[in-house]
Length: 342
Image (tube, rainbow, N blue to C red; front, side, top):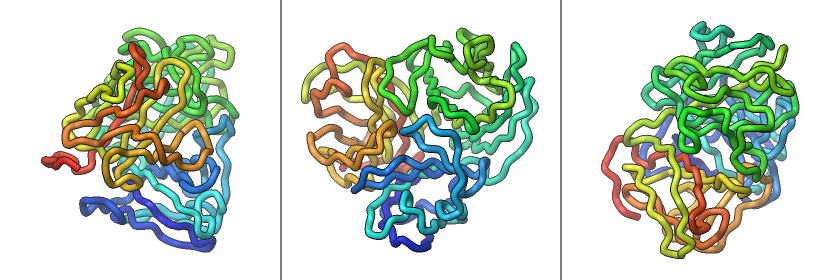
């Protein structure tokens, strides 16, 4: 995983994902998430399975859009941009969060619906697309050989919420979900995309809900994309913590120094993201919000990235209300290596 800062030039440019990282990260990304830091501009998500120039916006319900002047190529060491003001406005500062899947796609027939997948088993990450059939009892293969513990799903050709299912909330009951584009609380109602209980997912498939108002994850003729992660020791961690309401907040052990952390409360809260490229020392304040187009917030003394996890330094109710549960996703600064304190 890479977190790369860059400055827009209003023309064309190629971004190297090895820029401003502490290690020699260089890879062809399959998922690129772009956000302007200094302006109220939406979060743009591109992936290699859906194809260049096709983007989704995490702070909106909007269907997938295509613009040839956005992301134009996934390169062996980063990606290329054209002149779109959303991703390359002259003098705007940006962050690019990038993940590597398989570098190519394959057909997956593990489920009752054929899916297209790009899979990186070593990193525990897959990108999955499928088209709904409306049939009962449907499932799609996710390409990983273990249970995904953090799943983000978006309908591509329909304007609807981003569905987030996390093992840390209710175990395998992936009917419980959050919405990436809202502050909404954890719920098992409101059109779940995935089934509840043990059948919700397996080491090879996601079980899709049907019979709901919009047929959840299997609406006939609707196209979907899912980003699936499973934890990999020394590289990624997904879980939850309980707030204590103190500036000496909870410490969350991940087993590595984080490069990137995302947090959301199971109550009504925003989503929060920090990374070590925008904030190079503790205490870290530089916050972006997947559910908002807001510019980067830079005050408050919120979080420390430590050699083996992260620690909250705020009493903010969204992040550290006493007794409240927050879920998190974290990725390592130096995967599979010893980490030093900041």
